[in-house]
Length: 59
Length: 458
Image (cartoon, rainbow over all chains, first blue to last red; front, top):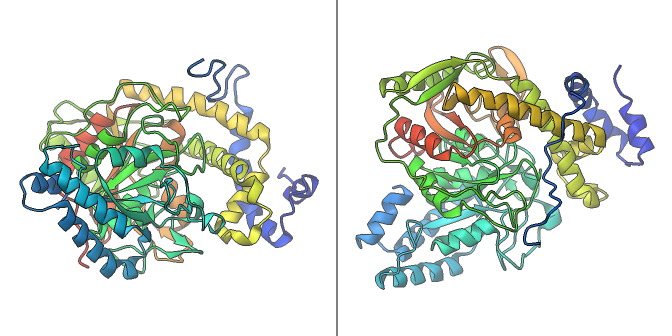
């Protein structure tokens, strides 16, 4: 089921004009359809590719 | 003439930096009204730098091959005292108080900065048709886009205005304009070149690299700009190499990967023919062509799109109340990013790591991959969809389809020209290497393009 992007935008108070939202709905739906199955298949122990380091350079 | 040829001529006393700079400024004056490649010129400062370079060289103070060479940088690299807009109306009057790391390195190498090149707004797109500063036009056909977002950089080099222009690449923004303008465009490994002082778009996807007329020129520039920089958190401490290949390098026994899936799907027939011809050329020079199946690049592209949407929207969030300051295409992407939940961004970054691991296995079988850079040649300005084999595709998605995933993986890649299509437009070929494998991909690129890239008649 596709997401209700208009409701999400309103809920987050994003103040995106209706016409601008209309223009991106199909793209968002397409990306959602491509991404969701990938995210569902993620192994529980997979870590994100982040750059956080507890020890800063020079400390 | 290439950058390295000009460097040789300078040292033989056949020309001077002052002469090269004057010629470049004259060419810009003549051709910029046709191409809009330059957004800001710093002619006075450039003439001064050229005089200083000539004096230093006369004293025997040689800073290397860039010394006295006229160059340009994309208008997202901070330049002290010189307006840096990022192609955005929001930053139209922004004058940095320091240089980007890349600008510092080029200056240390004695390069003569002529100005800043035009680009897609905020580097967020592939047309370089900028609503605030005008459309950059492709020197091969001025009704067509030069590609983007580093469109002005590619156009300025293709038009012979400068010997080299720096670009940045978040989802193909060096390689796409290199392909559409028939030039060499190098995207080094993530972390190889400092991002400090380059206006960001996608923190974890942004790469800095040169656009040039020859492979050896790109390598010479990489020699000058590569290396650790403590001001960039993602900068690598891995030692730099001499990246400049021999003029006629050997590729004997180099294992060149030919992808059986993805890279030749939905590709224009002329592009496919030209790139497949390059495999035969590589083979004739002793390279071993190995057929491989690549991981799911469409999935990697999806992950890349999501990461970029979120990173760019986070970056521009404070300005998004000023909607009239953005072009419609960029605003649409930023709005999409605002609607992406944080969980999706984190999961995209988790998927990215797995994909990186999966792709790494490929390097046990091959040393590099050769693919088309773009499935099409330069589209017309204003064209939003293109037809490939009778199938319609969004121009932005088609242009980024074969390059975006490489930013997700952080791999080095170089685009070189590889013939022309039926309309005489340049075709681009991409060589992808393993992390920090710049020397090898440049060697293969030099074997396939030993001469200066062809330039349009202007």
